Length: 488
Image (cartoon, rainbow, N blue to C red; front, top):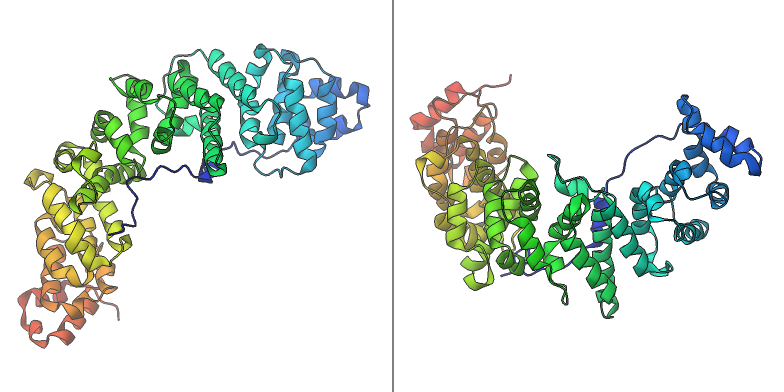
């Protein structure tokens, strides 16, 4: 059976990661006119004075000029010394070339190539001053046309590592930091180039294998951020032959250091970890799942890493030797893991029942029902009230399998808060198809002790009576009807 949620053996690396890059949003408000009006031989001096001005319009004038006349800005800088005095000017200029809103037309491409030609003579100390901008430009440039492409990657990565000596210490989202850092961006650029080589049917160049090895092994903050980029794309990265990244990544993922904890969070937030990655990083995945916080998107992705292998095993598509997380592990993780993991799992099941091929009823009977029976914890203490809305939605979404889905999920259902859960029932066919079961379902969710006004329930009750007139005598229906809010 083909499952729509994921191919557990997928090892692809999509170009969609371009869209994952984050850029600082800025409005260019500078006054470029004084720089535009300056004679060519005085433009550099005028620009240097402008960036030190207390007036923000004047201070941003050079940046505005770079956007207005990039060729003029390049000509000005090409005659200037590559030292700290001019680093700010170069930073703004390179940033203007790598702007996501700038089209890389023929003229811009030529400026990019000329920029790298001049910066090729710059000392590392100077490159360190503008490394973020140059690394960004490198990732956006047509790299296959860039002279000394491979040497530029190694040079930029070495500079980013060498001049970022601060120890790793952050409470921020690690992957977000990675995609906004030289080390992280360069690592993802190398992965893109590997994918391009594969698509072209050529051997992966040795320098790219060395690049991935460097990303996995380097120290310092940029080394951590490079590893975060690798781990974010771990299934694809592990499919690259000829380089060992498993050993250094496992080392980085182990232990209780802040780096290890943050990297494990990146690892388990990937919703489609391949079976190979699951096996190689099994311990880190299990520990990372138990460390999960309350972020909803991360919880859904993490839950998929528990449930995808379990479903594949239940269907007999794979064996337990193929995965680092088996059915017993899944049951243990859902039992001993944080509430966020169970909520993410319930949430993702609500999505999958509508997505897996074969339809909701078949999906319930063949996959989700057996899965819940096998791995979901039965302990009363773990029957959290916040899960009831997901299980209610899951039962309704099961379609023709609703009666059996409700019976199986009933132990996990509690009174819903306010009127949550009414609309999915109204929007379904279960009231007329299964009136008795639907009434029991409504009583379970909205009976005595419910805090809402039952708005919308009378319409459902009318459909129940239409399908089964005798049900009107049921005291549960009468109570729901009497306690439900109505509109005139």
